[in-house]
Amino acid sequence: MLPGGRSIRFRMPIPRNFERKLFDLIEVTSRAQRTGEFASGLAQALLKDLGGPLELRATGVFQPENGRYELRMTAGEPLWSQIEPMLTARTWQRRLEGNLWWVQRGLKYESPAGTEWLDLILIPVGARLQRVMGLLTRSLAGDDGQEREAAFQVLGRLVRLFVDRHHQKERLREILTLAREQQMSLLQTALPPVAGYEVAGLSIPDEEVGGDYFQITPLNKHLFGMAIADAKGKGFEAAVLTTGLHTALRVANQSPFKVTHKVELLNRSLVAPGEIRNLVSMFYGELDASGRIIYVNCSHPAPILVRANSLEELSAGGLFLGLGADTEYELGVCELSAGDLIVAYTDGWSELFNEAGEEFGVERLRDTVRGLHGAAPQDVITAVQAACDQFRGPAPYHDDRTLVVVRKE
Image (cartoon, rainbow, N blue to C red; front, side, top):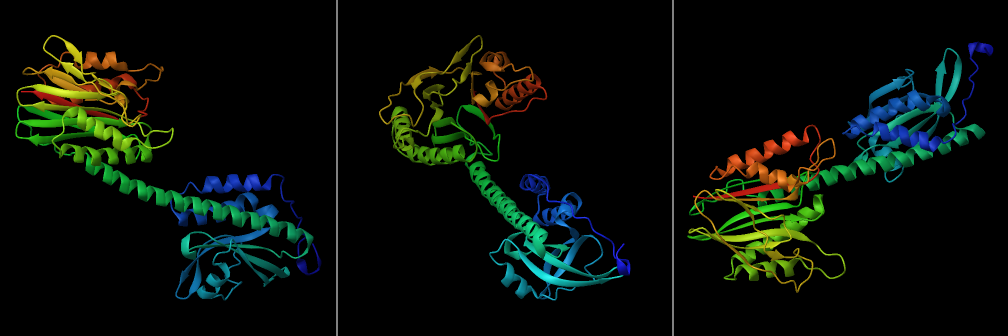
């Protein structure tokens, strides 16, 4: 003990790899979804895990209110009531706007142990200075104070990094939400009635947005078009491709073009200059009321035609859309009888895996629909879902998945 009852404080050195320890601490804390939780969580974690080397006495979080920054959370020694910074919100904002941190030096603290000088480190956390983290530390004067001040500067930079990353994630989440709403608006929730047929469809993106697409479009009283497509890749980029495909398909279907001409138009709309192409696999067909389908398959998994006593594949066509402007496509023609089904799908169903690493595969899919001739399209979709779920067990899906089922009445 020193005269006056003051105790001797033994300084803990700044640990080796301090930046890494600090980074890991902030990263764990930043898992909180809201900035407020992040600020208070970090203030408490700093005091608990690094309070010794940083010589922290107390931590807190401030928010602007009634022209001042008011304490909303505190941790550590009960010093805040005796140390009054007396700074207005305008003063704090002028000091902190655009800065990583700021320090108010020379705060006098009278305790039973004697006079002590503290510094208040202020670090903005969140947009528009809505939250400021306060760290009360022993005075930064002297050589050891310079080392701690450098550590606080690192802290300020890392906090800004994580806060900016948080806001970027929030903004991306907003963008993806809007993109999902836009993409889901492209998919028909209620399919239009088509003469001589019953149809059903299902599309489930693996992420917020995906690259699968389908559309049923009446072309006249006796003819309708069906499309199912899969943009290569996942997420936002694939969703942009399907949006472009949807627009191009609408334009093509408003024209009197034949099926192959429509597909060629779609292909040219997706061909971009350079070596990297925006590839889309697609099956497009037009069915009339009599049961005739004219189609083109552009490197898409071949839809399964379920007849009373056999299965066929609708595979005639050509290469991916977007691979080359001069791609030629073969036309396929088929006649459907009453009860015949067309089961069109994307590879998110056939290429799923179970925990043993086995692939569901096309043959299992064919076996699932083999005995469903004449079934309602929605029942066929339910049967495929059930078979895939039973096969994969607890293993997750890893791709977008879409089904379109058409039955000739």
